Image 1 (cartoon, rainbow, N blue to C red):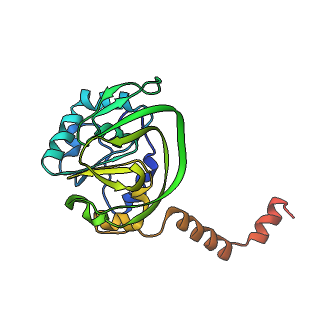
Image 2 (image 1 turned 60 degrees about the vertical axis):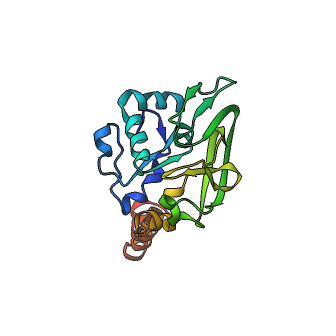
Image 3 (image 1 turned 180 degrees about the vertical axis):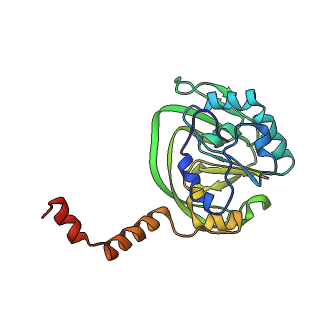
Length: 219
């Protein structure tokens, strides 16, 4: 989903090496999708209202009821829950999509930290991720807690799963090669950093850097 204030979309770049990633803004763009992802958001309640206005909320709900995989990351997890509580006026009160038995309460203090997390045993739709570890980061205001029988997907309340619906607080999941192999059946090749390192090595090997320095008047 690409709602108006979707955030952290750079974490999908690695997945683009092994899958066709579509940033959907209309229900038609979800036709045939293997996995629907609700990414982070800078303004969760506003983006949640936009999902309802565009009809995308109904499509996502119908997909989940039919057993289609739905993944929420950070703000996406918060949208998948039952309710957003905002006693301090950080983001706004809202009713969630009701696809996970969780609620989120906002506080003024913003949590930012790197995390390394490990998936617990997950329902059949997400079983391929069971036991996998990935390194990522959290950047959020909300604290999400369970209100029902959802499985704890990640320790310390960092993720919940209920059938085909999975929500996690940590970014970076779709940048991990092992995760992509488990979800999509293929792992990416070299990372962008590795490509740039290779280009730099090739330039240094084949270019007369001493000549360039002399032409530039650099000692």
